[in-house]
Length: 278
Image (tube, rainbow, N blue to C red; front, side):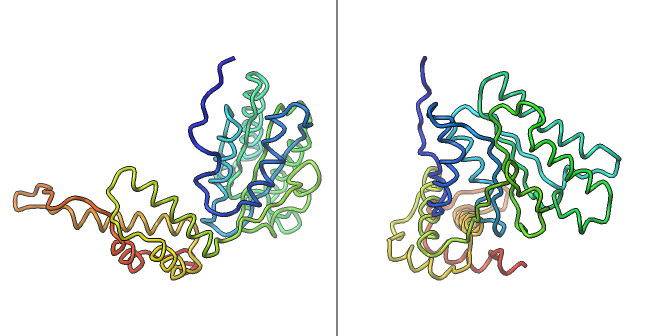
């Protein structure tokens, strides 16, 4: 059978988190690649502050699995004021993933973002429908019928509010902390974005390793999402420098677009990182 050619190294878009990614790959990817490795139900809970790559890791895992069905549901979107509707939405999501997996003999990932919005501790819940929803989730995770090759991944910024029963064996029985990047990881992330931007804009020669190291030391506490924001802001600065709106109200190119180190320095003045917004 003809195999597809892997054109991109799995997880190459993620800087740092090598140990965490390796742990996830051994749990969720290895059994699908080698038949002698027993496949087990996989329930993963990724936790950490916003912007550290939880969603990106789940997406990259789906790519690493090859042909894979990937469904994302946002926790708050599942909540409904109508009795039984939230539980039904969850059942449909599980059924959809299971059906795709079984009918096509493929791995399937159900990614529940902001899981704390729907799986908070029942002991502290104020409403019966929240309790029913958690009960429904636990029933589905326990596998009342063939789940197929289904991986369920939850992501949360507040793991302490997740109902303890959701973390027991056979459910979210593996918790992985996605930590904010240190300077070494920020340098890796910087290089990833620099490479991405070089695909559609010229890059100045000023991006030496010394500049990148000093810059990444200066942006302490910035996470991957923040570095992405810095590059977006720098690109906007680059555009404003390269084009004007003339007297006729039309865009006019006044110089070649070249992303410079000064654009990145200026972007720090305009972009507010996550840790300053909380």
